[in-house]
Image (cartoon, rainbow, N blue to C red; front, side, top):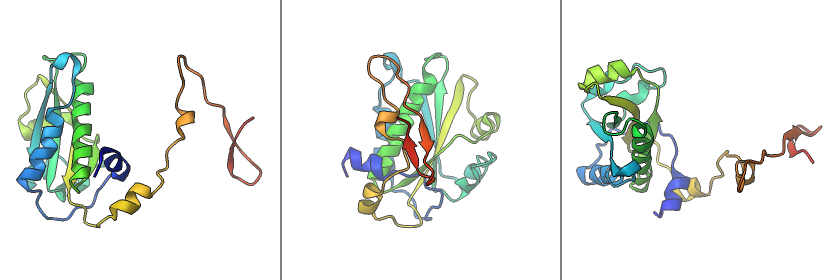
Length: 188
């Protein structure tokens, strides 16, 4: 699968098959994060791969994190605040997103987890004070198989590029109004 197909096919998966993720597949996904860019090449990240069911259960305190018990792998992305005080969050996020795209290309499903209590995650995993928990990624084979061709072709509910893009200086998009039919149309 090429990178654009992986980007189009990616979706937030919350229902996983119990099949384990093979080591070679997991290593390719982790490698995608390892080689990602970072400010001044500081690479201020550390990743914890959580496969143990009890440890995964300890990560489910967040309101939207309950399904982590069924995800065979959770990758916890940590940012090193000493190595890069300003950019550890951005750099770790970039590395995690590289992993998301690589996982999709490998046929895995993922879901970003931002719903967690950092102090509880740090305590459960023994994370030193200098690291911040940036995000977690649930990862595994989706329980429901997705036809990749239809996933790639499926239109996503996203704003049009012209509504989110300016050149050279900010230019607000023209407002959208509802026509009498209830359909959205751009104001002239």
